[in-house]
Amino acid sequence: MNGVLLVNKEKGVTSRDVVNEVSHILGTKKIGHTGTLDPMATGVLVLCIGSSLKLVESLMDHDKEYIATILLGIETDTLDITGEVQRKIVPQNITKERVVEILKKFQGKIKQEVPKYSAIKVGGKKLYEYARAGIEVSLPIHEVEISQIELVGDVLNNTFQIHVAVSKGTYIRSLVRDIGYALGTVAVMTDLVRTRVGKFLLKDTFLLSDIEEGNYKLLDPREVLDLPVIMVDDFLLKKIKNGCVLPSFFSCDMVFIENSNHELVAIYQQKGDGLVKPYRMF
Image (tube, rainbow, N blue to C red; front, side, top):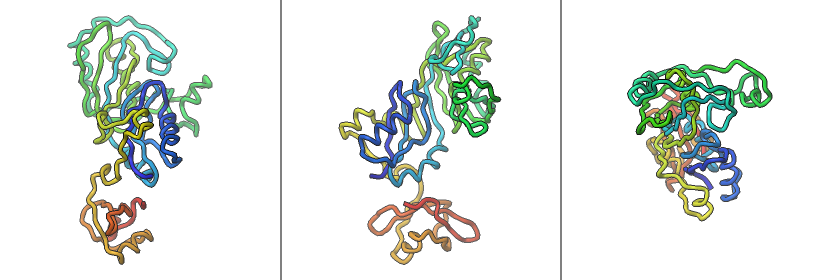
């Protein structure tokens, strides 16, 4: 079994839990996801199965979109509503107009301190392992890009929603924290829905119950990556199956290679100096 499966992760389970459950349902251990969703979050989780596991790295680079719900006035250790309250600051003068103006300041490239409850490694250990042990460490600061951020609806009882489109590595919990600071208070994320990963939309996903009932579709890698497809003859196919570096026979940067039966064999990419090399073998 090979392909890419789009899952609508439900609230209260980890991304690893979803992988384990789908692995059990489909009867395969060759399965992995392309980007973690917090247990409290729902939405698009992209799973690669079988030989398509070789696409995980490529798919992790995709940008993502979210709908996040923000509550002002409370800060927790996890930066979401599931954590322990660290402090409370009564919000002052929070209006829709002010929130809209503050959100504009976050569009573009920004510096972001990662949450202490995250899987980023420092000194060979994940940050959440330090946090659970009560050990304070310096939190890394990454540059990320917010390509779109806007208020959804109104601001009611110090609660509002935002729609954001972000680059790889963006922590929405950290963004929520920083929006709270910019508004002169603190904030937590109370809900998060991932609505898009790359070109994959929430409407195209399947619940675990759908998968259990056999109501799902596996995407072929050629449906996942927007690359040209080249069919090769048996002479060239033999060299490609051996992973040979070859004289360039295509002009673009990267292509799918298939055999005469339209079976996927490899992805090849330009090496330079008029040569091409394997990027992924299937």
